[in-house]
Length: 311
Image (cartoon, rainbow, N blue to C red; front, side, top):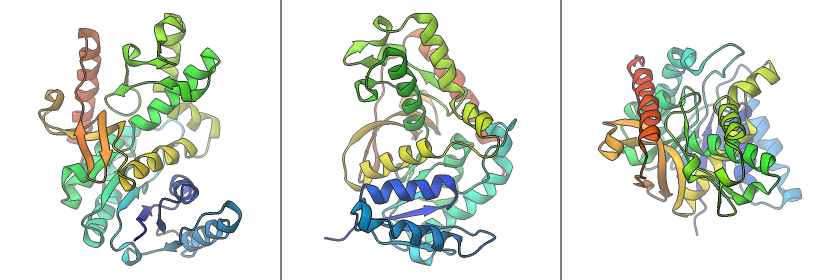
C-alpha cells in the first residue's frame, strides 16, 4: 500500500513543527521545502527529525529541499510560507508581501501535484487561501484554509481551564474570518454535553471569547520576536490527517462558499466535512439574528481583505 505524501512549504517554526506532528502521527512521507538564506536549512531540519524516528517509532521518510521537484505527486500540501506577524503588526499588514509569496508557491504546487489538497496557513489567512485558489487553478474543494481549527482549539483550551475539566470534553464551534472577526457560538459550545452557559457565567464567557479573538496577538506580544507555531502546526496536521485517512471529520475551516450562507464566492470559516476529496461538504447551521449579524460583519471583512489583494 502506497504511503501518503505530505509536502510542507516553509520550514520555519510552523512548517517544521507541522512536519514533527505529521511524522509523530505517521501520516506518510514528508517533504520540507524552503528557500532560506542558509540553503541547507530544510535538509538539516528534515534529517534531524528523521533521526528521531527510531526513538519515537515512526517510519516516515523525511527529506528537505530548496526546490519543488521532490514534492511531485503530493497528496496534501501545507503552505506555511510567508513572513510572520511582528509586534504591532496586524494580519492585514502582511497582505502585500505574502500575496506574492503564496502566489508563487501555489503555482509551483499545482505544477508538481495537480491532485493535491492544499491547506493554507499563511496570513492573512482569509486572503491567502483565496490567492492560493486563484494562483493554483485547482478545484476550490481542494483548497482549504486553516483557521477555525486553531481558533476553536484556543477557545476550548481557555474554557477547559476555566471549568477545570479535560480539554477533550469541550466541544465548540466558531464561524467567520480568522482573528478579531471570528464568531464564537456559545449556543453550539458544550462541555461533556452540558451547554457552556450552564458552566461559565456570561461575563467570564465574554472575557474568554475576547481572549480567543486576540489569541494570536497575545502570543506575538509575549514572544516579542515571532508568532505562534505549536498550535497552528497541530491544527494543520489535524486537517491533513482527516484528508489523508479520509476520516470525514467535521471541522471549522476556511472553505469556498458561494450559495452557502449567502456568501457569494469567498473563503470563510464554516463547518466542513474533510475527507480524501478535500472539502467534501459544507454544513449550514441555524443562526439567530445576533449571530447572523456578527457573521455578516466577519464576512464583510473577508471581502475587504480579498479586495486588497493585488495579484
